[in-house]
Image (cartoon, rainbow, N blue to C red; front, side, top):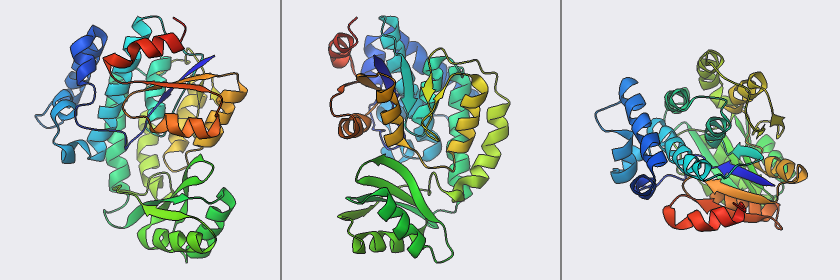
Length: 315
């Protein structure tokens, strides 16, 4: 059984998607649609394609550009696979990637998703002034230890697990001072390392509730359809099979932790044995290997990977 999994913010790089556009008409059409949507939605003069293919890197790294850029590259790759008969039994995505999963499943139209994730990125950035929030990766500690470190270091501020990626890799988020204190406390409790992350906001923490409040009515106003295949949601690792529960999960996701380890365990329990990381980067494949070591893992972001992916999908 096959699952398509879609990457989140941090997987972007200048040049992503260009080889797909050069090789496949489905990818060209996807980027052209995104460019039209981007301009209509009041973006600067650069097209999304130009930002993806040529950068500059600092603009591509802006959250409200990064999110539609990764979404577009992922959807372009997915459409190439679909055009050749590859069909997943389940889909899932890490944070932003859950929106790509919803486009793949037919829940949300692509153009609406491009507009929505640009605003999602803007709202998340505006929820906390730059410098006041932070995130850090805690390596080599259990979730219980990380939670204990956060509780003991909070001192009235917000700090909590934000990405529960796999055993021994948990990201925390919150007020910058609290994140620093929790990082030191986690090391004192036995964590191997605590690595500050170069992000512009404390994603998936209670500090994102203003962004959730702004995004919720826009999500609920969308014209959506029941997904063609179940989407295993970040917020509770449960398969969403109807539009309403799928949208509810996206609303909650803004300020709730990403339960990625639980998502992969759910996919495995449903019978998934092959995971295709669809879009830029290979971060998710590495996490899946740690959680579900017997699985077959492949990725698709460039034409030279197509044969291997199609073989994995037994097409």
